[in-house]
Image (cartoon, rainbow over all chains, first blue to last red; front, side, top):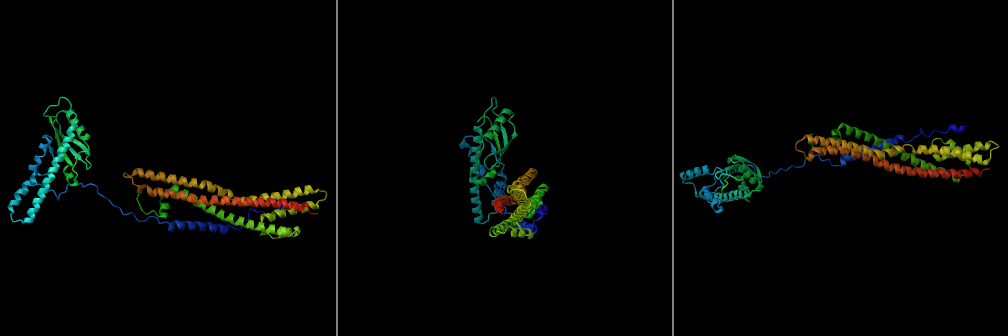
Length: 222
Length: 224
């Protein structure tokens, strides 16, 4: 049978080499396209960092502050008719005042501009002091209105808290500085402080530094 | 993980984890092979179509079957599947004709069987490697996806180790993992297209071969 002489078709693939070369070429082209055609990000984007709240009490503004605010600062509480929220703002008001008052008279030949500036600054400081006092009173009133009075609290109990205030008016960990001796009352005041959030703060952000750390004292009978 | 902004292509591949690199290598190999077969089949099928047309032309223009058969046997290198089918059928027919005492239907049956056998062989040859293309088309996206999933898993695991998580910590990992998917798709898409195209072409060729077989049987039956 001459059929056995049939040529074996399997061995013949005449285009092996050109096909292989073309396949390699296709891949080379593809990778070249990826490598050159696509702009891989090689430079870091310009970073911008923004500090959102002023963290340090402005030192520059502090020293020349407040000539007579202590006098005025006493006044605002009466209109609120709430004498007792003794709120001590950690601010060295008194000391710089004394120093300034002493130093100035000694140097009488300071020219008028400086004097006027001094006066203006004093004016502004006084206004600021009024605002501060107003808002401390508001804060105290707000907290006071939220105290749920426990029974049997002696009238002379006085709970003192240190409070860190955040710019939004929220309160960071109230700390009991001095207990009233009546645990229920201490707890009631602490709950009231937390419930009073957000605390009313002056719209002027510059004044916020004076509210950052507050000492609040509360008596039951007011 | 170092937060590098250099997301160049080479870095992406070089920084990938070992398994992802293995997957990429496998996909590259598969892609190379599939493209090789794509071109191989492209040339082979094109040549087959051309030779089929040439032979059909010659067959219908030239009624001298003996002459055609000599040409088919002589030209070793450049004969197509159809020419070989013709040669097998004609050789068998001539042999059976020489044996006296066979009736014509038996001769025709034998001739047809011979052509059928050659036809099967030729179809098998034409369809070789197509299964590979089909497998690449259906499997390589999954392989690429596997590499990607693995790479992203690693990216998130390394994210757990840093305190402050930013997009910059995961982005390079995810990008290098996605390269695996890209390679899988790059291998799969041409393979699927080529597979569909070539099986269509081969089906048409098969139809042509079959109808030629029938017509050639008729021509032989009319031989004295």
